[in-house]
Amino acid sequence: MNSKLKKKEVLYYSLIALPLAIIGLPLYIYIPTFYATDVGLDIAIVGLLIFIARVSDVFTDPFFGYLSDKCVQWFNSRKPLMIVGSLILIYSFYSLINPNKEFPQIWLLLYSILIYIGWSMINIPYLTWSSEISFNKIDTTTLNTSREMFTIIGVIIALLIPYIYGVSQNPKETLELLLYSFLILFIPLFFISIKNINIKSNSTNNKFNLTKIKKIYTDISDLKYLQIGYFFNNLANALPATLFLLFIEFVIQEKDSSGMILVLYFCSAVIALPFWNLLANKIGKKKTWLLSIFLALIAFIYVPFLEAKDLNLFIIISIVTGLSLGADMALPTSIQSDVVQTINTKNENISGLLFGIWTMITKLSLALSVAFSFLILGLFNFEADSPSELSLFVLTTLYGLVPIFFKLLAIYFIRKYSHDR
Image 1 (cartoon, helix red, strand yellow):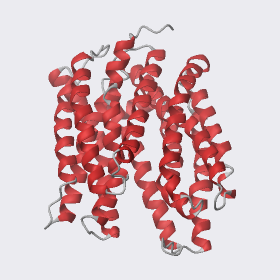
Image 2 (cartoon, helix red, strand yellow; image 1 turned 90 degrees about the horizontal axis):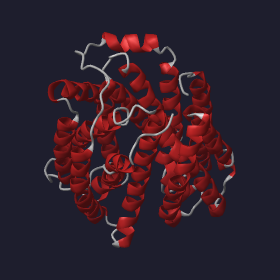
Image 3 (tube, helix red, strand yellow; image 1 turned 135 degrees about the horizontal axis):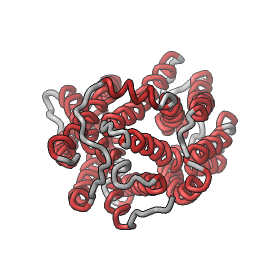
Image 4 (tube, helix red, strand yellow; image 1 turned 180 degrees about the vertical axis):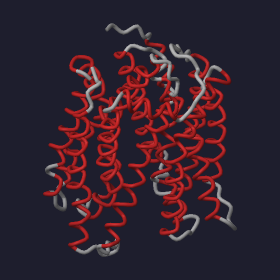
């Protein structure tokens, strides 16, 4: 099946991903540090409030997917929801880094929830576009691969900007710099995409009802295997991402090298993405995705044997796992886009809801990784000031061994999914 997608269409679609990636990094790295150090909240309170916000975000995604589909019924477009979401996102980001001094706890919780809401109102319709711009399966791979490439480039920019301007050790100045960078990029790129993206619909805008969900899982009975496999693979990726800074500081004992390793990790993902795209078009998306998971597994086998000052070996492992990251980011969502297109051909227009469920799975794995990892570390009395040998062993196990187990589970369930071509 030959591609009919123009290069400018791919570009217009991908542009939004870059600034969204820039705002995504502060939510996970800088905001907790800022509220614990500059604002002065207890770190346990900060962790609890952010966890509550993340959990609330997990369960609102299906609703915003449903709302995205309603926008198609009301306005024949998902763009109104995205525009409202962009306003909420900008306002919430500004408010988060300018907290109320009298009620910082309420401020952190409220605007964390709001920023996740704004993010979902943009991201769910945005992901859904990948199934609506073209009905060609090669095109969906191209769109998803290009989007994730721009996402990774955005992450690299967000990592480098604080170091380039010499503010990386100041959370407040870093957040302000990232806000300005986000606004400078997001406002023009968002409206370029909004103006130029044209959706092709081959399904009627039927009235929504929840019974359609049950029918979808009946018609595509192994869809659940794809989603379960995606969940376990995301959980396997989220655990080391959550524990990366702790692992490099206390096990590898090379804390100052963390920024460099992250840049190498994401750069290797950008380099590998075109290869995964070509391979997916030749042997299929599922087989290519499974190969990328095997590659990460091979690299992670060596993690439990790492010791202090094994920096070079850790860099090699990070680069190899970075190579597989691109496929992990692009191909599952591309397969989901194909599923949505299959459903649309049956005049079941609930694309947004399906992508809402998809993003819910992603966020659930992220939330559980934080809760799971820090709860286990807490049970073994991990203390940053003087970690015991046992707690360091537990940290290494959570970082290197547990993800292997989850990836094996992912492989088991992904192989049971049979609709990929």
